[in-house]
Image (cartoon, rainbow, N blue to C red):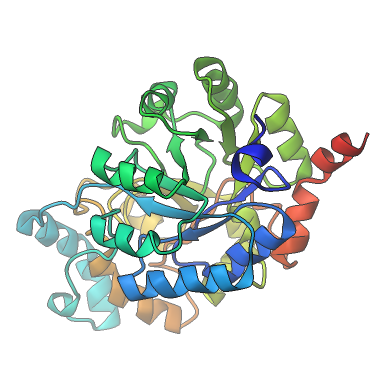
Length: 351
């Protein structure tokens, strides 16, 4: 079965769910172009989630994907929070911010029965997860809607774990990918390998369709991934400059600058490894730190610093998520980009 048959789409292109830089407009544009548009739900409160799903449902009749994190919410640690704020104290002083005034906690929420209640009203065709899978009772609810289930694997072991739990397809997330790593069986980042090394290994290890993700920026990259056995491709970074994306001005400027050529995995912004453009915070503290609170609690203390710097047009404390290949970032509509990405697939089908 092809990816198109599995999901009921025309093109084997999935728009990666990207919390903080998109809303329903990007997903709708991709869906209406024939790909699978995605809604990132980890940052949405219940009323916001319902509004986003309603917006998609009212603007397209095509299948779409809703994406959730499935991490375990950590218990706050006063000791780690103090250490993190101490590491940030020179920046608070520089901007005249009271470190105690910064909020605590984290906004990213895992998939829950409350969110399932809302999503069940819309019965999306695809539900995808990051950081493994939710508990069996929650996964069962998604299956009851008739949804196909996706999740990301960053290693062969993770792919086998996902297949054993009945996912319908696996996203092979290579180390080049922007945003959060989907790693979940280990916290050892040395296990993370590149997309074109990972894809054929996972294809050989599982029987379900494999979707390539990470460092793919154009139609040639899509063609290469599918030549290695991928049934389709998931792309995020390439969509960040599209007018339908909500990427902020500071982030857009960074993507269009020479700085975008240098990215790194960092845990500074949320507490989990994620790939972004190297900025001041990453250079001065080092991209990986043992001082950060557990995911997603690290983000709170940075919020006032980020707001103040962005107000001055600076991304010093912002998570400028991007993959290693930003050459596909163009200010063209998401619908045009989606069709261009699948050009080789369309040509092969017409031949």
